[in-house]
Length: 73
Image (cartoon, rainbow, N blue to C red; front, side, top):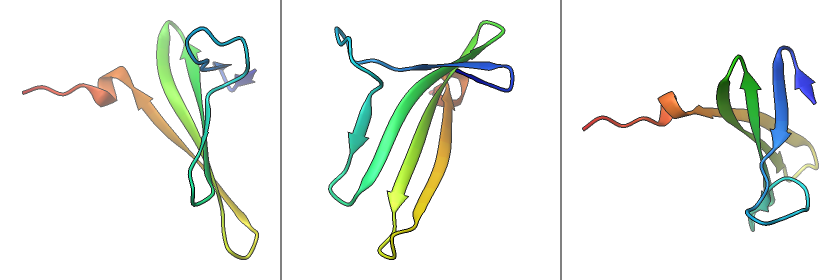
């Protein structure tokens, strides 16, 4: 799948032949993780979906790249 110029691929569990890594918490928050690549640059995207008590859903994307996660001490 492509989003603008980014190529998206689901992140798979090690040794798994099934689909993307999806995590659901006890309070109904579902997180899907995927890798986006563009010009030899990779970022990790987390698609977060939360169902509100009134039945509506909130969906947002969290981006993380190696540079964003770098910690210098």
